[in-house]
Length: 239
Image 1 (tube, rainbow, N blue to C red):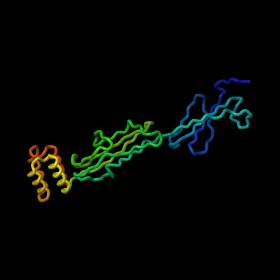
Image 2: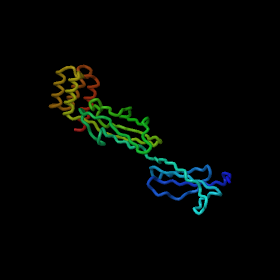
Image 3: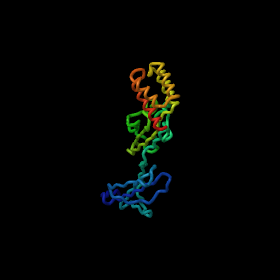
Image 4: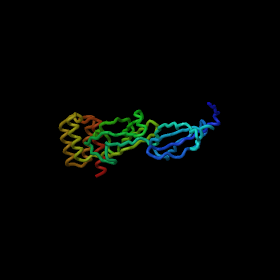
């Protein structure tokens, strides 16, 4: 004979078990009730089980009519944001010379829910940047620079990490900057190239700065002159 029971006569129990663990005790839950896996249970894969009983099929192991087989669902608890590793520039706090090159390179991984690719963003000194972007130190200002990478996983767990580096010129790197500027046509007169190199090798830095200032916008491209002056003044201040 089939029997029909009201919702109030149906009992529900649940339990959840982390993968690889021994199942715990069943817990009662009201019809249409809710439960959650606490965050401190630890990230991982869980088996969530539900079982029901009625006056004819109870949870008592001695009952001749067993309750129905549990319904099992597998879920993943993920409260951890992605792992971001900035591989270049490296290491943290590295100092580059004004003739060096580096790049912006990083990895973003999330073993649980996966990385939401749309959230992965990189910034260089606050401006949008891209993975693989070349950092040409001669085109930057002396001092501190930062690379920031942010990302979230597919559950919205977000994080970011920052890499800081320093940029300062040396006499050798400034000589290389002069050679490069001359070969690229940023300094248009060979005589200016020769005199600037000679000043860097034998004269005080302020004499070099004065010469660049005098030729700025003439035989030296303005932006190039400004960078050479900034590098030389920074070097002089640190000497």
